[in-house]
Image (cartoon, rainbow, N blue to C red):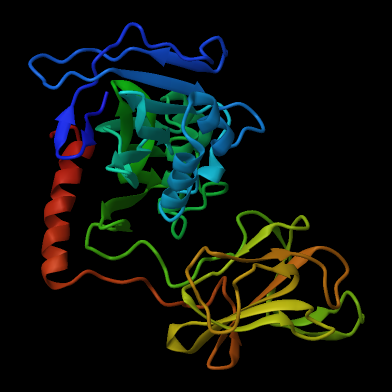
Amino acid sequence: MAVVALGALLYWWIPNDSVKHNQTNSTNLVTKPMSQAEEVLPILSTRLVEYTITPEETIGGIMNRVGVPPEESQNIIEKTESVYALSQIHVGKILKFIFAQEALASVEYPISDEKVLVVRREGEDFIATIEPLPIEVRERVVKFGIENSFYLDAQKQNVSDTTIMNTADVFRFGIDFESDITIGDTFTILYEERLQDGEYLRDGVVLGVLATVAGKQHKAYRFEDAYYDEEGNSLARAFLRTPLAYGSISSGYTQSRVNPVTRVIQPHRAIDYAAPLGTPVYATGDGIVSFSGWKNDALGYTVEIKHAGGYLSQYTHLSKVVSGIKKGSEVKQSETVGYVGSTGMSTGPHLQYALFKNGTPVNPLSDELPLGTTLEGEKYDDFIKNRETLQAKLSGNN
């Protein structure tokens, strides 16, 4: 149990076997005496109350049940609001209340596996903080060849869906995991696993990947929350290939197409993606929103984003635009800006995606687009040291 500050002194909580609570028969409330620490004075009469949150309960009602005075309950709710809103407590989680000399000393609420909200008494007031829970991080390397598919073969190695998807995301600009992967390709993945009290919680980040796909080597090394190839070139590109996680091309970029609505032959300098109504639409690159809302009767709800280098991306026929995506707002690559719809001149749910450079349409699937960043100077030197460490772990020589 954590040591709790009372005034200027620190105390381990001391048992008082006579302490009982008028709600101890409740199935979701347990009162426990605290374990005694040696050679600590003064001795305090203390108890721990663990309360399992059930549906439709409020934090105020719970504190009333465990014996917290109403004025202190309100004080705690107000003092935690700017740190973590206790109105957002979740069913099934356990609140811990510690009482000393029958006065509330602290409250703990587990926000996640790795963070806990702690409310401590300081005199007649309460102070709220979010504190980390102890997490152990270990690294794991898996090596496997493709016999069926990347997903199935990674699963055979007990790789989680999270790490499978994260690995695919690392190479999203260089490998199409649906069409490029073939029998005989190989993968080596170095990633983190996170544990608490020796028990596995979940996978962490992917640290490095070596892949051989169709005879071509692909290498990725994590450095400062991004991924680079062996020479320090970012694996990210200025633009995503597509603005959807899933969807099929229903009409490509062409100089001559029969318009499905007007039946007139005209250029179609954009890509149409057929996708279910409401499918999230992602910004293909970092930029500033230059237009958001109803464009005209032809394009319907539209978002336009200005990017560096004179580029502008356009997303049309949306069912709606994400709240907060307004003219002048900054967006990041892969940020959701809207949802697939059929507004404007449209025969069904789809996204029309267009990319322009200095006002001229370009084909986002075939034209040369800007590359990502390349590390230089001290950053490059630091990357090389990190790369060498990851290479040794990937090869099993660490």
